[in-house]
Length: 254
Image (tube, rainbow, N blue to C red; front, side):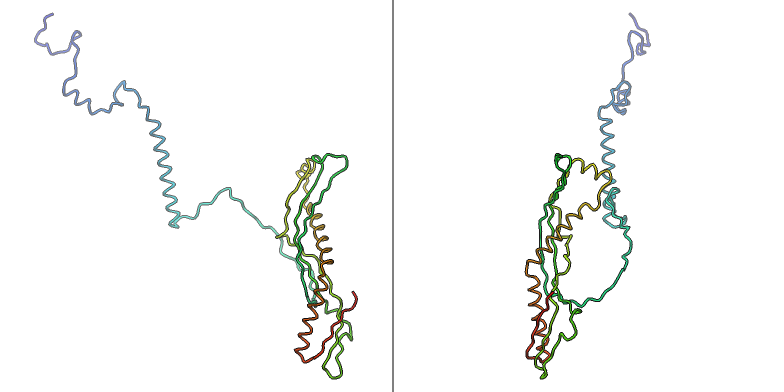
């Protein structure tokens, strides 16, 4: 088929094709923006990386600002807080003491206390506590109980005789900082009862038993005999320094 002078014009039989200028113009367009080009699979992943990078950069900047002291320290919003709503102490009484503490004994006792019911399984109703108690007991001489005429000085002033009341044991002082519950077993019903109403004085029985055991041990430990000897040595040294050559110390029956 013959073609006339407009042979370079595109026709249906001979469609137009890109020239050099068209190729250079199309090279400036990114491949992904070209019509009909498939979407890049790395687009969402790249966006996520940008977000993570920005968050990391923000944390680093904040930590750097905090280190410089410009901003206050960041604190845990769920940190444990302790509130003290205790009332101020109330002074109930004051008394003068005239006792000489001559000896002190430190004791430790292991209490194994169990409370259960007959014919009831232990996994249902049972309380067993293994408690390690530490406490101290003082032995003292109460000088306020010295009777009239208890001090007798010889005519020449070289000897003195003193009659003192027998040493006594003070109250047992249970040291709660050194005492602790080593083990505890409780039945199912005991645990349910604690959840319903609780028992803030549940350990009082164990504390009382530990104090009783320590008090009994102090009586059998010879603590009062040590107090007698220490008091005698103290008074002898004091009175001899005052010029008495002979000092006699005796104790009355308790």
